[in-house]
Length: 323
Length: 274
Image (tube, rainbow over all chains, first blue to last red; front, side):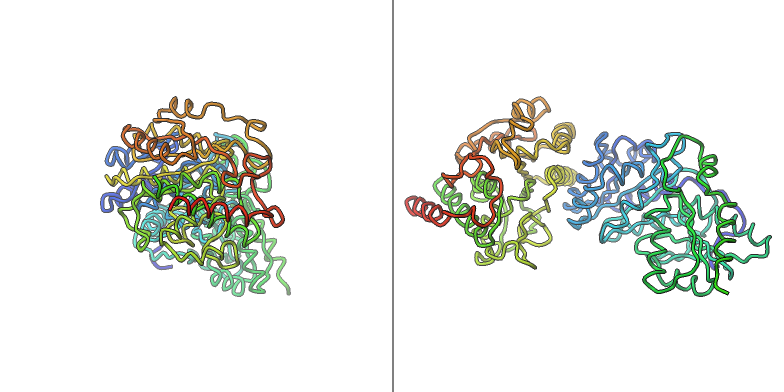
């Protein structure tokens, strides 16, 4: 539990943390460019534009071009960070991410803001409840969902300095700090942020990592010791930690700001299958349904993604353990 | 121009040989684009066959990527890889897949195959070079069927709006797509006018007149705008029996009957130019 923040400290929006880190990197590296499709104002784009007007390229509302143009720029040695809402960055430019970026082996960083239900009052067309499902199967892609600003800063730095296609979700609501600034992150390494022995809650992204920490406290009051893991990178996924937690705690609940189909829950189930490590497992996330308008708090309730829902799932999986 | 005409004939000969050898190929579109590629590799483009990634080179994105054989022929003839390798096209493990792949073939600048994306990437290359104040030229070749893809129109909108200059898109307007003649599916109408309205310097030329194509490129380069060249071409040009007939998009097996005679005739034309 080294270098974890103690107590509750409010974090900044991860979109803000992303933008600040991108600007810091752009100061050192003239090859970094920010490519936008008319949603730059939603990720503090003007701050980047003010400092680097030439390197802020807003191409207008054409997401397919957003992906392919970024791919082309990377061929000349630039390091493009291209951004849209997660719904569009995954669905609208799916083939371009696949072919122009990944298949062609280009160096493109796709930033996906307002993930899952945090698209909130923009409603069902904007909810990115399946974006991880769309990008996860793409070969050679790195998929990350940083849970706080320290994780986000590390993710951006790592993306800028490693060749390849990255898909990074960027939450725009404020949750709590989890990691200290110098936490030891790594691609493909999940972080155990609370130890426990009766069940493991594996979470993805700031909303559900925080939800699981709350759920763990509620479980503790019931005498249940819950381990909490922040998956951090969904691809490559930390198979060793998943297996270790399955063996040591014997029951798993996954929790994601995403559909229970195709995202974290599916990925963890795949690992347990492949490693012959089947344990009782339940997936918390958006059930296979469309989104709707509502504040994230309200949506979290109707989608059954509240701490109470995690608690109930934990009790079920514990009850499901073989005697 | 004589050298370019010879190169165009050689491209047709090698491309037909390799597609016939494998038993499948997008013959119609490969033949229609041969002259444009001959102008590019015979005269216009800066490149180094021994150093395909030379950063002083001009770039070509064959956005109609299924016509790889035409470009492979040019690259082999110019020394990017041995001519013998052309016969490996489409075999398992080949460096020459049917659709161009920048990670497999020396001299291919960008992977293409899903129509509309290559030209969009080419714009990205042009933007990246412009940012770095480099003056390399970037060329992209699209098909007329491909011009039905929305991403092509996004590219047409963006390039002039971002002040891109060293960028030329050539449309191999051979009047057919896969299912039918383009006019029977969704006509492009006046592509030259449309490109001009979008802010490009736009010309129409006979896509089989290498001198006209070369002049068009020079005009584009001098215009201070991104350039659009509408090449009036014939799908299957160079194989008289297949020129402009319907369903000449791709040939498999028996459809290649008669190709040896075609190759012989092209060979004779080549010798006559020598």
